[in-house]
Length: 393
Ligand SMILES: [Mg+2]
Image (cartoon, rainbow, N blue to C red; front, side):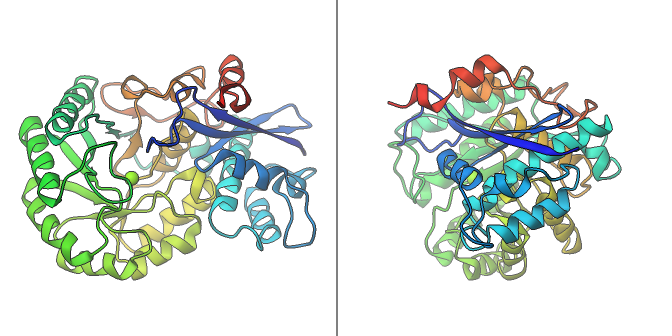
């Protein structure tokens, strides 16, 4: 079997707003076509025009090649070799960041083809099942420009998440810092008050994570407030510091009795080695599309196992990326949760409608996939409807 072409779809939700913090409103979806007629699907979470340029661009020298031209004519089942070929051949402009994100979409689609060719779900090509079912946590998108409204909104979302079967959810609590939510502004006390109110409302028998989205620029100040969150039994605190402050992360790790989760933006196993070995983080959060696809994500899972860290993948895109996370989790014993942006709790029509079926959640968990490949099917009408050319204003 040979790869014949790669189609890139730059997608945009009509409601997309450059001032919004959610990345669920755009997408770069690739379809890889083969001479057998099999088509693989993948997606990634970065600026979709940038990722498309990496794939479509024309090479000018051996370390500055385009991704599509490097893989056309190759055997799509040879995922390890193709990963290396793309990594080396794009090294001068790629190697980290968006180039790897673009490779991630392609690698995901190659795994989809591998599964379809073998008639097996992708996870069965990776290894044995490590779980009977996969446990999702809900990522909540609260609203409100003041702390009281924001807290009420979070508590409402928590109730909805529990009513549709979730036993775990992540609170986005960002009253300051680079990701400060909408018009909500507050200080360290605001963080403690919001999280305390949510814990009191949902009770002790519900797993809570908190994402402050790189809020603090100083590890010592962060520690003071995070110490006040310790009694609230959080499963982890996500990205308390700016991503490049690895020494700050190591300081927090040494002084805090709470897991620290980082990794949503990271590309390649090399950046995760830095996070784990220098930053001392407890929970690695590879996003399958961003980190470089399933091939690279599984290497990060192995590294985490060697270091006795947990894996809880980041995923903020459609059922394509969620499915890829589920296949990764299926064979990873140290992956207790996957992030799941439930269609019912999501205001992105692109997230809801791009695939024919959503990843199923039954009684609060996701069954191990049994369809060949990733097990997702694109809705052709949705592909046309969300085409960025139609929705850019
Ligand atoms: Mg986050």
